[in-house]
Length: 449
Image (tube, rainbow, N blue to C red; front, top):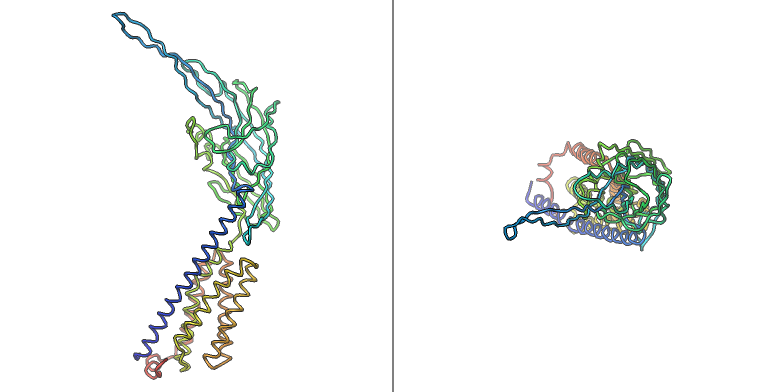
């Protein structure tokens, strides 16, 4: 290979690397737009209801234990007894024996500027059994016990989303829920005072319902001994997260249904309640949750970021095709022309990001593709002094954009499809140039501009 050809190869490679700078800047812009979108969604959710996690319900019984400490002391050679009254405030937390949740969620969208947040209102009903042990499970010990008012508590991560709450039905009695968690172990929630609940061994059925508004996801932390959840929503492609996945679920164009069954051996709600200290927040109460998220199968900014990662592939393939034209057709192409075509390819990702915030992603992708392939086809036709070559180049570039669109849609198979694409392109280049005598070609090549 002569010196001019080697220099041209090095210059083209350097240009390709330099053009990664605008592609990287576009990726940073996409990340910035995503951060703005998240900020806008957070602002909408702040006034509607944020991601919701429900924990419980369980029974809280505050009590005070009082006892007398007797100490002997010697004063003036005589033994005397000194009595000191001691007391401590404690809390007994008792999980429900079983809870059956029925959740029916309806989703909607709210906009702030060009950004949209996915919101929901869930109608939730809980039915279960509350087993109360004798003396509320508190062992007889020293001193006297003064019982406070028992209360059934329900943790709700963002109470601003509570639209309505029915009265609690417990056995033959009823009680209204009051604001506030009613237990320092929970950050937020509601509670129902149970003035008539006695500390005798009994088993009581309970049920209540509530309308809860939130954004993007709803989760239930199973604190009962046995928990069953049946959820339905009108969102067709949810994401199931959390520690517990559905035992079964069905997806359809009109929404999804899912069922969870969490046994006492898996949830260990009683153990987690017992591990909570008396007057401190207990984060582990909401940690082991089952969750359904109402998300896009592939979010807009996620697709834009993935598309921008293929920027170097587009630039590299285009420059490689240009260089082959130079070598095989003896058509010198100036480095400035390489750079202009590379910038046009980088502009595709900027156009796609700008248009997709206002149009459907498929339409924005088609518009950006037509704009970039059109200008590149016209310019390449002039540079190569061959209109057919320009059209062929634009058609090949359009086909490459089409393949990229399929890769963006195949979220689970993107790596496999991308690897097969690269391997196929390399194979095609090797087959097309298998008869080229590169030593003769580079020696005989005229100096390239």
